[in-house]
Image: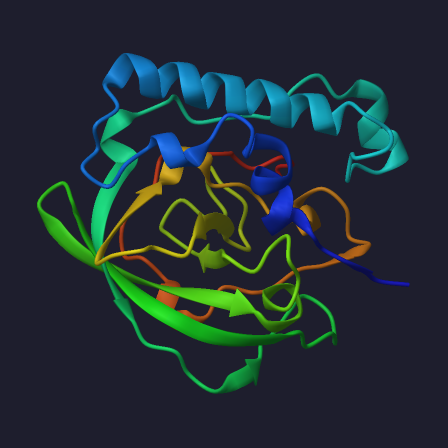
Length: 212
């Protein structure tokens, strides 16, 4: 049996109380505040992995688990981008299994990092869009040049809230692995080709196992 991966909801389930809303699109938080926020975020994520009720780990990995592996927190990976709303028809997103959940493209994000321009597409899960809890959430699955080397080969995810204007922040320090990185029982969305970044994103969660 395959289990639907709900890992891309983790951040908002746990951290709405401390508020991504504090991170405004003008990057007004300073480096020290950002370090504190991300450090706390990681501590809470590790706590979830150590809890038998919320951990995606299989029974063998759970026994020895202490904490996830992370890239060092890097303020440069908190980027400000321009957001263009561009809602498409619904489509079936490919996953690691035969499951094909219904999504739609919601908008494109363009940003600069280290002097180069990049783009990502943000998607909306149709099932969650119809719920009161997640109706404002967007999903950004992506791949980069660290995949299979220092990060999970299948790519990583970021969650954001629907922007109210034409700017949006993306914090790659908060990028996380699909649950498939920890347990083959899950079914996880595969990042579409348009979200393959031709750059190393040395931020967020690293690979969990050497064979992944």
